[in-house]
Amino acid sequence: NTITQTESQVLNFYQCEIVSALGGTMGAGEISCLREYTQVYGADKTIRALQKSLQCAGNLKGIALVKYAGGILRNWATYGEQERTAPKKIKSGRAIDSLRALMEG
Image (cartoon, rainbow, N blue to C red; front, side, top):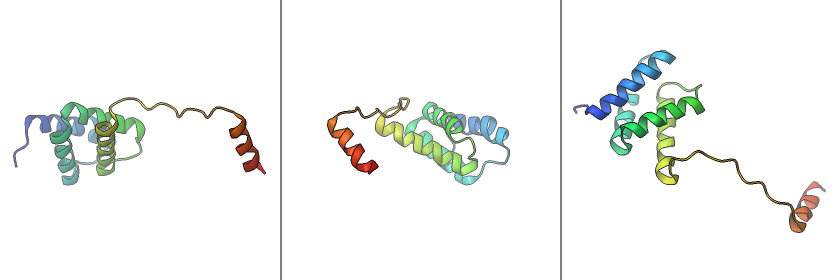
């Protein structure tokens, strides 16, 4: 199973920018996932997802970090690649105020 140029680009990025920075070696599971993500989502998106996973879950390493990036890619495929915004606050009103009063006792 020959590695394509785009897969090689992602694997090189992962090895040079992530594995060498965090320490350790690249395992077969990581290679397999990264190749799959590259085939499905493309090299640029896969690299952006790896970068985003480092920002959001910098405490993860190895296959856990790669799988986190996979989750990001799936979310982008479903919802689009935009920054998340804070949830909207519920406005106050008579019904909301009544509910709050009931809940507070």
